[in-house]
Image 1 (tube, rainbow, N blue to C red):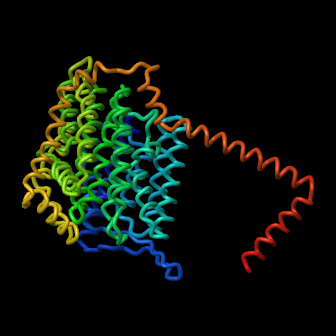
Image 2: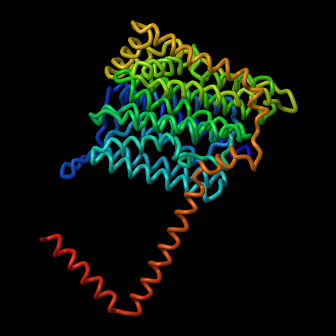
Length: 498
Protein backbone atom coordinates (compact mmCIF):
# COMPACT_ATOMS: atom_id res chain seq x y z
CA UNK A 1 0.00 0.00 0.00
CA UNK A 2 2.85 2.38 0.77
CA UNK A 3 4.37 1.70 -2.66
CA UNK A 4 1.03 2.32 -4.36
CA UNK A 5 0.59 5.58 -2.45
CA UNK A 6 4.09 6.75 -3.46
CA UNK A 7 3.45 5.90 -7.11
CA UNK A 8 0.14 7.75 -7.02
CA UNK A 9 1.79 10.78 -5.44
CA UNK A 10 4.50 10.72 -8.11
CA UNK A 11 1.85 10.65 -10.86
CA UNK A 12 0.03 13.57 -9.29
CA UNK A 13 3.15 15.67 -8.90
CA UNK A 14 4.32 14.86 -12.45
CA UNK A 15 0.95 15.83 -13.86
CA UNK A 16 0.92 19.07 -11.90
CA UNK A 17 4.47 20.03 -12.92
CA UNK A 18 3.80 19.27 -16.61
CA UNK A 19 0.64 21.36 -16.64
CA UNK A 20 2.34 24.31 -14.94
CA UNK A 21 5.28 23.95 -17.32
CA UNK A 22 2.95 24.01 -20.33
CA UNK A 23 1.26 27.15 -19.04
CA UNK A 24 4.58 28.86 -18.35
CA UNK A 25 6.00 27.88 -21.74
CA UNK A 26 2.90 29.16 -23.52
CA UNK A 27 3.16 32.45 -21.69
CA UNK A 28 6.92 32.77 -22.23
CA UNK A 29 6.76 32.05 -25.97
CA UNK A 30 3.69 34.27 -26.36
CA UNK A 31 1.82 31.66 -28.39
CA UNK A 32 -1.82 32.83 -28.33
CA UNK A 33 -3.03 30.20 -30.81
CA UNK A 34 -1.69 26.78 -31.76
CA UNK A 35 -3.11 25.24 -34.97
CA UNK A 36 -3.06 21.44 -34.84
CA UNK A 37 -4.82 20.75 -38.15
CA UNK A 38 -6.43 22.82 -40.88
CA UNK A 39 -8.97 21.43 -43.35
CA UNK A 40 -9.40 24.23 -45.87
CA UNK A 41 -11.85 22.27 -48.04
CA UNK A 42 -14.25 21.92 -45.12
CA UNK A 43 -13.23 25.25 -43.48
CA UNK A 44 -12.51 23.34 -40.26
CA UNK A 45 -9.58 24.23 -38.02
CA UNK A 46 -8.43 22.23 -35.02
CA UNK A 47 -6.64 24.70 -32.76
CA UNK A 48 -5.96 25.59 -29.13
CA UNK A 49 -6.01 29.12 -27.76
CA UNK A 50 -4.00 30.28 -24.74
CA UNK A 51 -5.68 33.63 -24.21
CA UNK A 52 -6.32 35.40 -20.92
CA UNK A 53 -9.46 33.40 -20.18
CA UNK A 54 -7.61 30.11 -20.64
CA UNK A 55 -4.68 31.18 -18.43
CA UNK A 56 -6.96 32.41 -15.64
CA UNK A 57 -9.11 29.28 -15.62
CA UNK A 58 -6.09 26.97 -15.88
CA UNK A 59 -4.70 28.55 -12.71
CA UNK A 60 -8.12 28.33 -11.04
CA UNK A 61 -8.16 24.65 -11.98
CA UNK A 62 -4.65 23.73 -10.86
CA UNK A 63 -4.17 25.78 -7.66
CA UNK A 64 -7.07 24.23 -5.69
CA UNK A 65 -6.11 20.84 -7.11
CA UNK A 66 -2.59 21.18 -5.68
CA UNK A 67 -3.94 22.53 -2.38
CA UNK A 68 -6.37 19.63 -1.94
CA UNK A 69 -3.68 17.10 -2.86
CA UNK A 70 -1.31 18.54 -0.23
CA UNK A 71 -3.97 19.03 2.43
CA UNK A 72 -5.46 15.54 2.00
CA UNK A 73 -2.56 13.35 0.86
CA UNK A 74 -4.32 10.07 1.64
CA UNK A 75 -7.23 10.88 -0.63
CA UNK A 76 -7.43 8.66 -3.73
CA UNK A 77 -6.53 10.05 -7.14
CA UNK A 78 -7.21 7.64 -9.98
CA UNK A 79 -6.44 7.85 -13.67
CA UNK A 80 -10.00 8.95 -14.49
CA UNK A 81 -9.21 12.20 -12.69
CA UNK A 82 -6.29 12.70 -15.09
CA UNK A 83 -8.75 12.38 -17.94
CA UNK A 84 -11.14 14.87 -16.36
CA UNK A 85 -8.45 17.48 -15.81
CA UNK A 86 -6.98 16.93 -19.28
CA UNK A 87 -10.40 17.17 -20.93
CA UNK A 88 -11.26 20.29 -18.93
CA UNK A 89 -7.99 22.02 -19.80
CA UNK A 90 -8.36 21.15 -23.48
CA UNK A 91 -11.96 22.36 -23.52
CA UNK A 92 -10.92 25.62 -21.85
CA UNK A 93 -8.33 26.20 -24.58
CA UNK A 94 -10.29 24.74 -27.53
CA UNK A 95 -10.66 27.13 -30.46
CA UNK A 96 -13.32 26.39 -33.06
CA UNK A 97 -16.22 23.95 -33.21
CA UNK A 98 -14.18 20.81 -34.11
CA UNK A 99 -11.71 21.32 -31.25
CA UNK A 100 -14.51 22.04 -28.79
CA UNK A 101 -16.40 18.93 -29.92
CA UNK A 102 -13.36 16.69 -29.45
CA UNK A 103 -12.44 18.07 -26.01
CA UNK A 104 -16.10 17.98 -24.96
CA UNK A 105 -16.46 14.28 -25.77
CA UNK A 106 -13.12 13.49 -24.10
CA UNK A 107 -14.33 15.18 -20.90
CA UNK A 108 -17.60 13.23 -20.93
CA UNK A 109 -15.76 9.95 -21.49
CA UNK A 110 -13.49 10.75 -18.54
CA UNK A 111 -16.51 11.51 -16.36
CA UNK A 112 -18.04 8.21 -17.43
CA UNK A 113 -14.82 6.37 -16.52
CA UNK A 114 -14.78 8.06 -13.13
CA UNK A 115 -18.33 6.98 -12.40
CA UNK A 116 -17.42 3.38 -13.23
CA UNK A 117 -14.20 3.55 -11.19
CA UNK A 118 -16.13 4.80 -8.14
CA UNK A 119 -18.79 2.12 -8.67
CA UNK A 120 -21.58 4.60 -9.29
CA UNK A 121 -24.60 2.77 -10.68
CA UNK A 122 -24.30 2.03 -14.38
CA UNK A 123 -27.63 3.68 -15.19
CA UNK A 124 -26.45 7.02 -13.77
CA UNK A 125 -23.12 6.73 -15.60
CA UNK A 126 -24.78 5.91 -18.93
CA UNK A 127 -27.30 8.72 -18.44
CA UNK A 128 -24.55 11.28 -17.90
CA UNK A 129 -22.57 10.08 -20.91
CA UNK A 130 -25.61 10.22 -23.19
CA UNK A 131 -26.60 13.70 -22.03
CA UNK A 132 -23.05 15.01 -22.42
CA UNK A 133 -22.47 13.64 -25.92
CA UNK A 134 -25.94 14.69 -27.04
CA UNK A 135 -25.21 18.23 -25.81
CA UNK A 136 -21.87 18.21 -27.66
CA UNK A 137 -23.62 17.27 -30.92
CA UNK A 138 -26.21 20.00 -30.35
CA UNK A 139 -23.41 22.53 -29.91
CA UNK A 140 -21.64 21.37 -33.07
CA UNK A 141 -24.86 21.57 -35.10
CA UNK A 142 -25.67 25.01 -33.67
CA UNK A 143 -22.17 26.29 -34.43
CA UNK A 144 -22.34 25.07 -38.03
CA UNK A 145 -25.79 26.60 -38.59
CA UNK A 146 -24.99 29.72 -36.50
CA UNK A 147 -28.08 28.98 -34.41
CA UNK A 148 -27.78 30.82 -31.10
CA UNK A 149 -30.63 28.87 -29.49
CA UNK A 150 -28.90 25.53 -30.04
CA UNK A 151 -25.51 26.86 -28.91
CA UNK A 152 -26.99 28.40 -25.75
CA UNK A 153 -28.87 25.18 -24.95
CA UNK A 154 -25.70 23.10 -25.36
CA UNK A 155 -23.60 25.45 -23.21
CA UNK A 156 -26.36 25.40 -20.59
CA UNK A 157 -26.07 21.60 -20.57
CA UNK A 158 -22.26 21.82 -20.24
CA UNK A 159 -22.77 23.60 -16.90
CA UNK A 160 -25.09 20.70 -15.92
CA UNK A 161 -27.93 23.11 -15.15
CA UNK A 162 -31.54 21.95 -15.14
CA UNK A 163 -32.82 19.97 -17.02
CA UNK A 164 -29.36 18.61 -17.89
CA UNK A 165 -28.29 17.81 -14.32
CA UNK A 166 -27.35 14.16 -15.17
CA UNK A 167 -24.35 15.50 -17.13
CA UNK A 168 -22.36 15.47 -13.86
CA UNK A 169 -22.43 12.85 -11.06
CA UNK A 170 -25.52 13.10 -8.85
CA UNK A 171 -26.70 9.76 -7.53
CA UNK A 172 -23.93 7.86 -5.80
CA UNK A 173 -21.47 10.77 -5.94
CA UNK A 174 -18.91 10.92 -3.13
CA UNK A 175 -16.88 13.69 -1.52
CA UNK A 176 -14.09 13.70 -4.10
CA UNK A 177 -16.60 14.40 -6.87
CA UNK A 178 -17.00 17.96 -5.64
CA UNK A 179 -13.74 19.19 -7.11
CA UNK A 180 -12.61 16.80 -9.82
CA UNK A 181 -16.02 15.88 -11.25
CA UNK A 182 -17.84 19.18 -10.69
CA UNK A 183 -15.50 22.15 -10.40
CA UNK A 184 -13.32 21.12 -13.36
CA UNK A 185 -16.22 20.65 -15.84
CA UNK A 186 -17.83 23.81 -14.48
CA UNK A 187 -14.74 25.87 -15.28
CA UNK A 188 -14.62 24.37 -18.78
CA UNK A 189 -18.27 25.23 -19.38
CA UNK A 190 -17.75 28.76 -18.06
CA UNK A 191 -14.88 29.24 -20.54
CA UNK A 192 -17.23 28.45 -23.43
CA UNK A 193 -19.71 31.05 -22.20
CA UNK A 194 -16.96 33.67 -21.84
CA UNK A 195 -16.08 33.25 -25.53
CA UNK A 196 -19.61 33.88 -26.75
CA UNK A 197 -18.39 36.99 -28.62
CA UNK A 198 -16.72 34.68 -31.16
CA UNK A 199 -20.18 33.89 -32.57
CA UNK A 200 -20.72 37.54 -33.48
CA UNK A 201 -24.38 37.53 -32.35
CA UNK A 202 -26.17 38.31 -29.10
CA UNK A 203 -27.30 35.44 -26.86
CA UNK A 204 -31.07 34.79 -26.59
CA UNK A 205 -31.62 36.94 -23.51
CA UNK A 206 -35.35 36.44 -22.90
CA UNK A 207 -35.12 32.69 -23.36
CA UNK A 208 -32.12 32.39 -21.00
CA UNK A 209 -33.87 34.54 -18.38
CA UNK A 210 -36.85 32.19 -18.31
CA UNK A 211 -34.57 29.15 -18.21
CA UNK A 212 -32.61 30.65 -15.31
CA UNK A 213 -35.80 31.36 -13.39
CA UNK A 214 -36.92 27.76 -13.80
CA UNK A 215 -33.53 26.52 -12.64
CA UNK A 216 -33.72 28.65 -9.50
CA UNK A 217 -37.18 27.30 -8.66
CA UNK A 218 -36.21 23.66 -9.23
CA UNK A 219 -33.10 24.04 -7.05
CA UNK A 220 -35.26 25.52 -4.27
CA UNK A 221 -37.50 22.45 -4.34
CA UNK A 222 -34.61 19.98 -4.41
CA UNK A 223 -32.50 21.47 -1.61
CA UNK A 224 -35.01 20.88 1.19
CA UNK A 225 -35.05 17.10 0.73
CA UNK A 226 -31.27 16.65 0.47
CA UNK A 227 -29.44 15.24 3.50
CA UNK A 228 -26.01 14.47 2.02
CA UNK A 229 -23.53 17.41 2.27
CA UNK A 230 -21.82 16.74 -1.07
CA UNK A 231 -25.10 16.64 -2.99
CA UNK A 232 -26.49 19.64 -1.11
CA UNK A 233 -23.43 21.64 -2.20
CA UNK A 234 -23.93 20.53 -5.81
CA UNK A 235 -27.55 21.70 -5.72
CA UNK A 236 -26.78 25.00 -3.97
CA UNK A 237 -23.99 25.80 -6.42
CA UNK A 238 -26.50 25.89 -9.29
CA UNK A 239 -27.58 29.41 -8.29
CA UNK A 240 -23.99 30.65 -8.72
CA UNK A 241 -23.47 28.84 -12.02
CA UNK A 242 -26.79 30.13 -13.39
CA UNK A 243 -25.49 33.68 -12.98
CA UNK A 244 -22.70 33.00 -15.52
CA UNK A 245 -25.00 32.89 -18.60
CA UNK A 246 -26.94 35.85 -17.20
CA UNK A 247 -23.72 37.86 -16.87
CA UNK A 248 -22.75 37.10 -20.48
CA UNK A 249 -26.25 37.97 -21.69
CA UNK A 250 -27.02 41.20 -19.84
CA UNK A 251 -23.62 42.71 -18.95
CA UNK A 252 -22.43 43.22 -22.56
CA UNK A 253 -18.65 43.96 -22.62
CA UNK A 254 -18.24 43.40 -18.87
CA UNK A 255 -19.86 39.96 -19.04
CA UNK A 256 -16.63 38.00 -19.58
CA UNK A 257 -14.97 39.53 -16.49
CA UNK A 258 -18.09 39.01 -14.36
CA UNK A 259 -18.37 35.38 -15.50
CA UNK A 260 -14.66 34.82 -14.82
CA UNK A 261 -14.97 36.04 -11.23
CA UNK A 262 -18.15 34.03 -10.67
CA UNK A 263 -16.51 30.85 -11.97
CA UNK A 264 -13.34 31.31 -9.92
CA UNK A 265 -15.36 32.03 -6.79
CA UNK A 266 -17.47 28.90 -7.26
CA UNK A 267 -14.37 26.81 -7.97
CA UNK A 268 -12.64 27.87 -4.76
CA UNK A 269 -15.88 27.26 -2.85
CA UNK A 270 -15.87 23.68 -4.13
CA UNK A 271 -12.27 23.37 -2.94
CA UNK A 272 -13.14 24.52 0.59
CA UNK A 273 -16.17 22.22 0.74
CA UNK A 274 -14.23 19.15 -0.37
CA UNK A 275 -11.37 19.89 2.01
CA UNK A 276 -13.81 20.29 4.91
CA UNK A 277 -15.49 16.95 4.17
CA UNK A 278 -12.16 15.15 3.80
CA UNK A 279 -10.82 16.55 7.05
CA UNK A 280 -14.04 15.57 8.75
CA UNK A 281 -13.54 11.99 7.52
CA UNK A 282 -10.04 12.00 9.07
CA UNK A 283 -11.42 13.28 12.40
CA UNK A 284 -9.66 16.61 12.16
CA UNK A 285 -12.56 18.33 13.88
CA UNK A 286 -10.87 21.63 14.71
CA UNK A 287 -10.95 23.19 11.25
CA UNK A 288 -13.65 21.55 9.07
CA UNK A 289 -16.30 23.98 10.29
CA UNK A 290 -14.15 26.99 9.42
CA UNK A 291 -13.42 25.51 6.00
CA UNK A 292 -17.12 24.91 5.41
CA UNK A 293 -17.96 28.47 6.47
CA UNK A 294 -15.31 29.73 4.05
CA UNK A 295 -16.90 27.69 1.27
CA UNK A 296 -20.34 29.14 1.99
CA UNK A 297 -18.96 32.69 2.01
CA UNK A 298 -17.06 32.12 -1.25
CA UNK A 299 -20.10 30.57 -2.92
CA UNK A 300 -22.30 33.47 -1.83
CA UNK A 301 -19.88 36.01 -3.32
CA UNK A 302 -19.35 37.96 -0.11
CA UNK A 303 -16.90 40.89 -0.07
CA UNK A 304 -13.21 39.91 -0.03
CA UNK A 305 -13.95 36.81 -2.14
CA UNK A 306 -13.30 36.41 -5.90
CA UNK A 307 -17.01 36.11 -6.67
CA UNK A 308 -17.91 39.49 -5.15
CA UNK A 309 -17.33 41.62 -8.24
CA UNK A 310 -18.92 39.03 -10.50
CA UNK A 311 -22.09 38.69 -8.45
CA UNK A 312 -22.45 42.41 -7.73
CA UNK A 313 -21.83 43.27 -11.38
CA UNK A 314 -24.34 40.69 -12.59
CA UNK A 315 -26.98 42.09 -10.24
CA UNK A 316 -26.30 45.61 -11.52
CA UNK A 317 -26.58 44.38 -15.10
CA UNK A 318 -29.91 42.69 -14.34
CA UNK A 319 -31.20 45.87 -12.71
CA UNK A 320 -30.14 48.10 -15.59
CA UNK A 321 -31.60 45.67 -18.14
CA UNK A 322 -35.01 45.74 -16.50
CA UNK A 323 -34.80 42.12 -15.29
CA UNK A 324 -36.24 42.95 -11.88
CA UNK A 325 -38.06 39.65 -11.47
CA UNK A 326 -34.88 37.72 -12.27
CA UNK A 327 -32.95 39.82 -9.76
CA UNK A 328 -35.56 39.18 -7.07
CA UNK A 329 -35.65 35.47 -7.83
CA UNK A 330 -31.85 35.27 -7.69
CA UNK A 331 -31.84 36.91 -4.25
CA UNK A 332 -34.56 34.62 -2.90
CA UNK A 333 -32.87 31.55 -4.36
CA UNK A 334 -29.54 32.51 -2.80
CA UNK A 335 -31.19 32.88 0.59
CA UNK A 336 -33.05 29.59 0.47
CA UNK A 337 -30.16 27.60 -1.00
CA UNK A 338 -27.56 28.83 1.47
CA UNK A 339 -29.70 28.20 4.57
CA UNK A 340 -29.25 24.39 4.61
CA UNK A 341 -25.49 24.74 4.07
CA UNK A 342 -25.06 26.56 7.38
CA UNK A 343 -26.51 23.50 9.18
CA UNK A 344 -23.94 21.16 7.65
CA UNK A 345 -21.18 23.37 9.03
CA UNK A 346 -22.41 22.88 12.61
CA UNK A 347 -22.72 19.14 12.04
CA UNK A 348 -19.09 18.72 10.94
CA UNK A 349 -17.46 17.03 13.92
CA UNK A 350 -15.40 13.90 14.37
CA UNK A 351 -14.82 11.48 17.22
CA UNK A 352 -11.18 12.40 17.84
CA UNK A 353 -9.03 15.49 17.80
CA UNK A 354 -6.05 15.43 15.48
CA UNK A 355 -4.19 18.49 14.30
CA UNK A 356 -3.18 18.65 10.62
CA UNK A 357 0.43 18.02 9.70
CA UNK A 358 2.76 20.61 8.18
CA UNK A 359 2.14 19.45 4.64
CA UNK A 360 -1.60 19.59 5.21
CA UNK A 361 -1.25 23.11 6.58
CA UNK A 362 0.74 23.98 3.46
CA UNK A 363 -2.12 22.90 1.20
CA UNK A 364 -4.61 24.94 3.20
CA UNK A 365 -2.26 27.94 3.14
CA UNK A 366 -2.01 27.74 -0.67
CA UNK A 367 -5.78 27.70 -1.03
CA UNK A 368 -6.33 30.60 1.38
CA UNK A 369 -3.48 32.66 -0.07
CA UNK A 370 -4.73 32.21 -3.64
CA UNK A 371 -8.31 33.20 -2.82
CA UNK A 372 -7.15 36.27 -0.87
CA UNK A 373 -4.91 37.43 -3.74
CA UNK A 374 -7.66 36.93 -6.30
CA UNK A 375 -10.15 38.74 -4.08
CA UNK A 376 -7.96 41.77 -3.32
CA UNK A 377 -6.42 42.02 -6.79
CA UNK A 378 -9.22 40.73 -9.00
CA UNK A 379 -9.13 43.62 -11.46
CA UNK A 380 -5.29 43.85 -11.79
CA UNK A 381 -5.21 40.07 -12.23
CA UNK A 382 -7.67 40.28 -15.14
CA UNK A 383 -5.95 43.33 -16.64
CA UNK A 384 -2.52 41.72 -16.85
CA UNK A 385 -3.69 38.71 -18.90
CA UNK A 386 -4.55 40.01 -22.39
CA UNK A 387 -6.21 42.93 -24.18
CA UNK A 388 -9.78 41.53 -24.55
CA UNK A 389 -9.99 40.50 -20.90
CA UNK A 390 -8.41 43.81 -19.88
CA UNK A 391 -11.12 45.68 -21.76
CA UNK A 392 -13.79 43.54 -20.13
CA UNK A 393 -12.29 44.18 -16.68
CA UNK A 394 -12.28 47.93 -17.35
CA UNK A 395 -15.92 47.76 -18.43
CA UNK A 396 -16.69 45.79 -15.26
CA UNK A 397 -15.08 48.45 -13.09
CA UNK A 398 -17.13 51.07 -14.90
CA UNK A 399 -20.32 49.16 -14.11
CA UNK A 400 -19.50 48.54 -10.44
CA UNK A 401 -17.09 51.22 -9.17
CA UNK A 402 -16.89 54.17 -11.57
CA UNK A 403 -20.60 54.40 -12.20
CA UNK A 404 -23.23 57.10 -12.00
CA UNK A 405 -25.96 54.58 -11.17
CA UNK A 406 -25.65 54.75 -7.40
CA UNK A 407 -29.13 53.26 -6.97
CA UNK A 408 -28.17 50.21 -9.00
CA UNK A 409 -25.03 49.65 -6.91
CA UNK A 410 -27.00 49.97 -3.66
CA UNK A 411 -29.65 47.53 -4.86
CA UNK A 412 -26.98 45.08 -5.98
CA UNK A 413 -25.25 45.22 -2.60
CA UNK A 414 -28.57 44.68 -0.82
CA UNK A 415 -29.36 41.63 -2.94
CA UNK A 416 -25.82 40.35 -2.35
CA UNK A 417 -25.46 40.85 1.40
CA UNK A 418 -29.04 40.38 2.62
CA UNK A 419 -29.30 36.71 1.47
CA UNK A 420 -26.08 35.82 3.31
CA UNK A 421 -27.35 37.26 6.58
CA UNK A 422 -30.93 36.04 6.16
CA UNK A 423 -29.85 32.52 5.24
CA UNK A 424 -27.80 32.27 8.44
CA UNK A 425 -30.84 33.05 10.58
CA UNK A 426 -33.04 30.72 8.50
CA UNK A 427 -30.84 27.72 9.18
CA UNK A 428 -33.15 26.63 12.02
CA UNK A 429 -36.13 26.67 9.69
CA UNK A 430 -34.16 24.71 7.13
CA UNK A 431 -33.33 22.09 9.75
CA UNK A 432 -36.92 21.82 10.99
CA UNK A 433 -38.60 21.69 7.58
CA UNK A 434 -38.03 18.19 6.26
CA UNK A 435 -40.79 17.01 3.90
CA UNK A 436 -42.18 13.52 4.40
CA UNK A 437 -41.66 10.93 1.64
CA UNK A 438 -45.39 11.10 0.85
CA UNK A 439 -45.66 14.89 0.88
CA UNK A 440 -46.52 16.99 -2.15
CA UNK A 441 -43.07 18.63 -2.11
CA UNK A 442 -41.30 15.28 -2.23
CA UNK A 443 -43.48 13.98 -5.05
CA UNK A 444 -42.93 17.24 -6.95
CA UNK A 445 -39.15 16.94 -6.46
CA UNK A 446 -39.21 13.39 -7.83
CA UNK A 447 -41.31 14.51 -10.80
CA UNK A 448 -38.84 17.33 -11.54
CA UNK A 449 -35.98 14.81 -11.59
CA UNK A 450 -37.37 13.76 -15.00
CA UNK A 451 -36.72 10.11 -14.23
CA UNK A 452 -40.24 9.37 -15.43
CA UNK A 453 -39.34 10.97 -18.77
CA UNK A 454 -36.26 8.80 -19.03
CA UNK A 455 -38.31 5.67 -18.35
CA UNK A 456 -40.84 6.73 -21.00
CA UNK A 457 -38.05 7.15 -23.55
CA UNK A 458 -36.69 3.74 -22.62
CA UNK A 459 -40.08 2.15 -23.18
CA UNK A 460 -40.42 3.90 -26.54
CA UNK A 461 -36.92 2.80 -27.50
CA UNK A 462 -37.62 -0.79 -26.53
CA UNK A 463 -40.81 -0.80 -28.61
CA UNK A 464 -39.03 0.71 -31.60
CA UNK A 465 -36.25 -1.86 -31.29
CA UNK A 466 -38.76 -4.68 -31.03
CA UNK A 467 -40.63 -3.40 -34.10
CA UNK A 468 -37.38 -3.06 -36.07
CA UNK A 469 -36.41 -6.62 -35.14
CA UNK A 470 -39.82 -7.91 -36.22
CA UNK A 471 -39.61 -6.03 -39.51
CA UNK A 472 -36.12 -7.36 -40.16
CA UNK A 473 -37.36 -10.87 -39.43
CA UNK A 474 -40.19 -10.47 -41.93
CA UNK A 475 -37.76 -9.09 -44.53
CA UNK A 476 -35.45 -12.05 -44.10
CA UNK A 477 -38.28 -14.50 -44.66
CA UNK A 478 -39.93 -12.63 -47.58
CA UNK A 479 -37.69 -11.07 -50.31
CA UNK A 480 -40.69 -9.12 -51.62
CA UNK A 481 -40.26 -6.63 -48.76
CA UNK A 482 -36.78 -5.73 -50.00
CA UNK A 483 -38.14 -5.12 -53.50
CA UNK A 484 -40.80 -2.80 -52.06
CA UNK A 485 -38.12 -0.86 -50.12
CA UNK A 486 -36.00 -0.48 -53.27
CA UNK A 487 -39.03 0.75 -55.19
CA UNK A 488 -39.82 3.25 -52.43
CA UNK A 489 -36.31 4.72 -52.54
CA UNK A 490 -36.43 4.95 -56.35
CA UNK A 491 -39.71 6.87 -56.10
CA UNK A 492 -38.21 9.22 -53.51
CA UNK A 493 -35.18 9.90 -55.72
CA UNK A 494 -37.39 10.62 -58.73
CA UNK A 495 -39.48 13.10 -56.71
CA UNK A 496 -36.37 14.84 -55.41
CA UNK A 497 -34.91 15.11 -58.93
CA UNK A 498 -38.12 16.66 -60.23
